[in-house]
Length: 164
Image 1 (cartoon, rainbow, N blue to C red):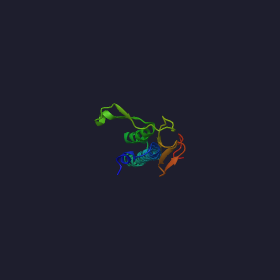
Image 2: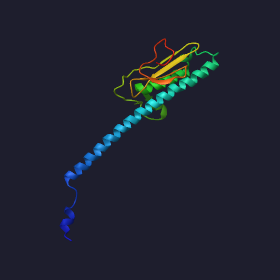
Image 3: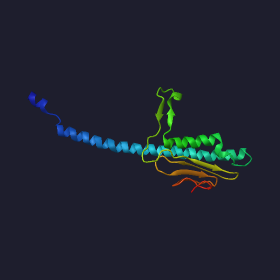
Image 4: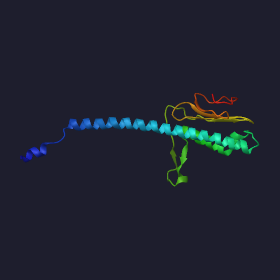
């Protein structure tokens, strides 16, 4: 066999560029899917935190003379609502508390959703309503004393006692 023919075989520059282009296109598709999955995970976290408010509200009602009064100022409710809102607004994570040397790590850098949105909670003697903004869309997740747990385009009005 001719030794020169053995060394001249290989890939051409065009073939290599085509393979690199195909890999780039596939990578772009995968990265887009991962961003959607991240938003879905953040929304699931928010929905779970707000759903936990319902459980805490019933515990509050039973342990406070069958009244929801003062529920929104209660520490567990405030913490759950704050945690849900922090997912949306990208509150910083205190890494030092978890043994990481960096001072803070941003939790969320979503674009397209207004930053600084807030949750809401209202309660009186016999009813309550709580809502938090979702991360992937400019909407809210709401729970109330009637048993509703749903997505809404707007937060509950100040004197409304049911999810819109």
